[in-house]
Image (cartoon, rainbow, N blue to C red):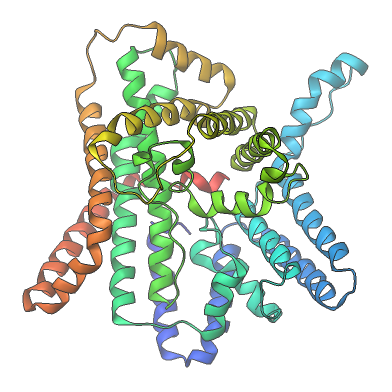
Length: 470
């Protein structure tokens, strides 16, 4: 069930009604059953994989807590989860990459495995790994029960595409049970409405058709057409994924839980390091805490060159996490190089929380161009098509007709991105103002109703979320 489907609306409405009727002590079981049903309705056979993965890891966690050699069980737990992830996500990619070598050496082409990628496996695998490492390091007060751990992993709002949760971040909430307040419900409704508008109206209705058209035949159109399509894809993937994250956070709010912020106006970043503090925040912090910090190269501890190498490998792995293909590996590696160049050249970078100023405009503009150029690899299905798209950008003339409507749509998206930045710190005060005045509820209802009507009117074009493939 897609979040933007009628089936999910019925599913969540029934769940919410039952959730409010049941006493708090029974709500955990209801949520667990609903989450397992949600996953089962996607690909029924893979519910066995999800349950087995969590069950094996839970048994290993129990042994880890009781054993005098906890590192052994940590190694087994992480290895088991990574092997499952590697088999389902990367087996075909590895075999396809080895076919030229095996053909040249032995004249044999091994069969390529045909596997359906289990939805959300990249996300729940990372949560399991984080849980194992945090248990080993004593970051959890005590190991919860198996049903609690299972709900932590398969909590349906974030099961398919995050945000990636930490045990010490979400398990205490599950222990307390959902705390539903008027403010949290209002915030949840707005998050769901704005997330649906981002996904359905902006990403799917306005941006996706033009982006798909140009990327389907790279090199055929003019340079301005390719440039606008590239900018369009940058905002398509942002509104698509941040829209999912907003809906997930909103659904959790209606159930009385808080999920972490996953995006903070990433295209207003001034440099590479700031970008990864604003884009897919839960993934970038996960890579920092569980890959960069644990790679056996020393990280920041053994000199600058080791730190750069560790950073590069971390970003390579981050690219590979996004997809089993050389385009994603190179995309991650180039982001690693970009981060290394930034770290080597900028000695005293501004704090990422520092307010934006007019003097930041050149840095923001330049950074956005780099991110968009790297997006060619992210979007193109092959290196050959990525090269054709890049050639069109740099070898064709810009002194030709620009696509007027797509250009205007991109400009509106840029304006909305600045609008998000302006609104975020002012939103709590605005909500309080609406709550304090009699006309506030009417105005808020009118705004939500208009947004809902717009989403419904354009909902026929909505498709799957881009990050479901990862």
